[in-house]
Length: 233
Image 1 (cartoon, helix red, strand yellow):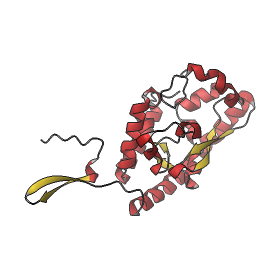
Image 2: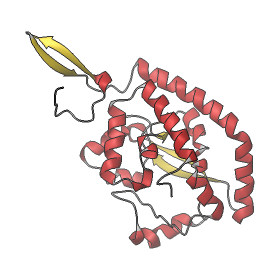
Image 3: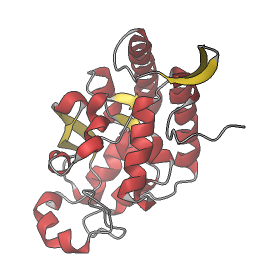
Image 4: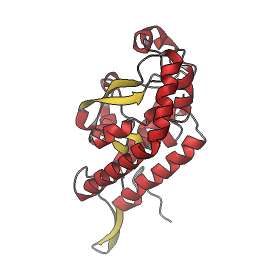
């Protein structure tokens, strides 16, 4: 066993090559285009299409529940930052009160999140139906439409808000090298219970070591987390 100071580099990017009789570790520089990402896009379209069809009956129930709860809009559209810093409108089932954005300034001092993230464990803006949707990540279902549009991927880093990106520094910008995802290492690794530093490390490890098999594993882990959610609020 050899000890190495190389951190957060997955096996596919590392190889052992003899140079002048010396066994040297070769680390391949991450690439963010090419054939592998064509496969990722095909996988995205296939999974998103199947998910929208499969969740259609549940979506009708969710729509009815939201309308019966407070009669407000069913969908919530919010600006998020995607690949290479391009903004897009992310769609979710509305889980908060209609005036949630206006209440944000008054609640900012009670932030339970870390770093640029704003999270409240007992957010008074979340509706009764919204608490159920958030706990089981059902509010995220409409984002499969963003995947079909090519703005998001099924698996990737968490899509940040524009004001979060303005507070990024140094290597954190590497989160924007690929499309954000509906699920990813943050969602299955603890979500809001993670510190900002842990969240960034998980996302960057994913960005630089992405693989089709890794995406399939994260999808499977997501299904397990939805049944037994942790850190969802």
